[in-house]
Amino acid sequence: MIAARSPKRTRRTLAALAGAATLAAGSLGIWAATGATAQAATLPAPDHIVVVVMENHAYSQVIGSSGAPYINNTLKAGGASLTQSYGLTHPSEPNYYQLFSGSNQGRTDDSCVSVGSMSAANLASELIAAGKTWASYNEGLPSQGSTVCSSGNYAQKHNPWFGFSNVPTSTAKTMTQFPTDYTTLPKVSFVVPDLCNDMHDCSVGTGDTWIKNKLGAYATWAKTHNSMLVVTFDEDNRLAGNRIPTVFYGEHVTPASSTATTYNHYNVLRTLEDLAGLSAHAGNAASATDITGIWN
Image 1 (cartoon, helix red, strand yellow):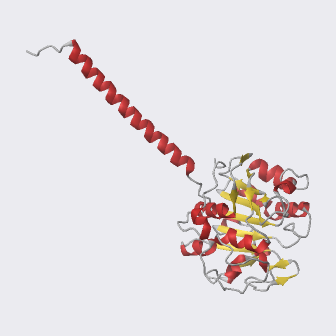
Image 2 (cartoon, one colour; image 1 turned 90 degrees about the horizontal axis):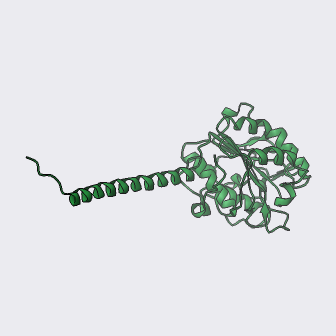
Image 3 (cartoon, one colour; image 1 turned 30 degrees about the vertical axis):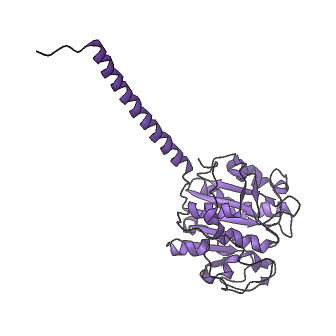
């Protein structure tokens, strides 16, 4: 014969079961929140990233300007704008080294660098060490791998890869070598227009048209092929606190999005490294945060 449970004992048992259920639900809630947070913080993994570096213009000279219809009406409208993006110093050359290697590497002016004189880690050396591909496409470069300081509108000061012994000079290509079959692009590549088309010596409109003509087809392709285009500037015009335009565009970038978080070249470098799936981080990129709030 089974003894009947007392009403008081039954209430205690039900309370215990309810408490266990609440604890389990709470644990699931914590797990779900943690999982969602981790997922939100995860960057996409694009197959190809192309970075274009333009010259010497402040944010307000480009973003919202009628002189830059392609950047504004296509790249910004269909991608993401960093509204508080900053160069780190003046003049141009140190900024390129900071964007590429997380340090100015002692460069404080625009003088021609001694080829292969540095051995510090950088974006290209990290990609190569990880078995991934890298190249630069340099408008006006006389020939692939040429180490000339200047030639016409070409200027070596905008091409920091030549300063490093751990980056083969053969990975420095001419702009005419930029492929039309975008599947053959490296994992990460930098594109550097010449002194006119980068807006240094010519107008914002000239540079805007150049980006559209040279990279517009790639940008369109990137939208549906797990790839990305990044347009940024080395520094401002020395009149805006070094606030510069930076725009991300691609399949995993939320259209018409923006972030007002303050970022600089080190954040962009860190983000490029992490987008490329690298575990290493060069120089000050190691302590920089990734760009967030723009990924879909």
